[in-house]
Image (cartoon, rainbow, N blue to C red):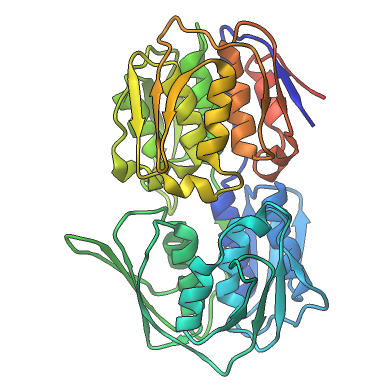
Length: 438
């Protein structure tokens, strides 16, 4: 699948983006482990989250859709059934890493598979702490999928300092901690998204969070029962980021994005853009278990910045969009401590450098970051054919960047947009973007 996009002007309207992907995964997982029925509204019906549903269905969980809600008939912490075949997580790194924490404690064997992209991503970051907890995991020599998890008598708690800023690793350990003897303690020196901690609270799971000078400390103990909960999932900030970018860089534009999640651990992109001079306003803020707001964005003249390294982990999924914004800013933007970008659906540092090169942007690629020489408020990208490398966020960022090209651009290998934003093209057309899906 490929997209063709024309130069843009005057984007207007009010839009909603699909439900948050990170929250959708976690809601299905905890609802499946609860004792009783949970209803989930706003669930993201993208391929990644549907893969999570299929995995739990394979383990005997009854999950059905009733109008706009998903009903999950939880089987309890120890009620999952042995799957009759390997569990296929397709392209979902979140799902395979978080579910590994649950599967490590089950009294049955499981084999975890993924597509070619997921099978190239590093899994030792989860298998190592799980093995410290007593789990029996077997992966490839390269530390990648497939992973085989064999049953053990019990898991034990650990004190673990996260070696990488990864919410997926943190969450894997927390899910394993549901089954582990003693107090599981995680030290997080760089703040990452806290959806698991918030979702644990929503399902009544005791979790203690404290802050030292150097780190956030998360503690929890084994639980016997998880109570069901009805969950409303807000719009995905990472999906919203592409339309925030679109309004900022397209002349004469003003967009209102409704009911978007503005969890403080997710909106580093907003902080960075405001530092660049972006005209962005939060309206109708609601402080629920996941805070939400409407986001009003207007065309803005941006200036280059040196990105605060504390924001990098906070905005890891928005980096492709940020690189496009930086490319159209006045002056130079510097990003470092972003090596984690190399372990995503594609090597996003390399992939985005090739996108910028196709657009005619000058940059210096580093091992852990990039220096981008912005084209300025009057700058125009070179219309190009761009390879998204099968990475949904590269595809969408490149599509939005094409709004500032000097002609029609083509983005190839875009099928993976369906993993997180299945109606991306429709929403683009809704605000006046001339995009075709071929």
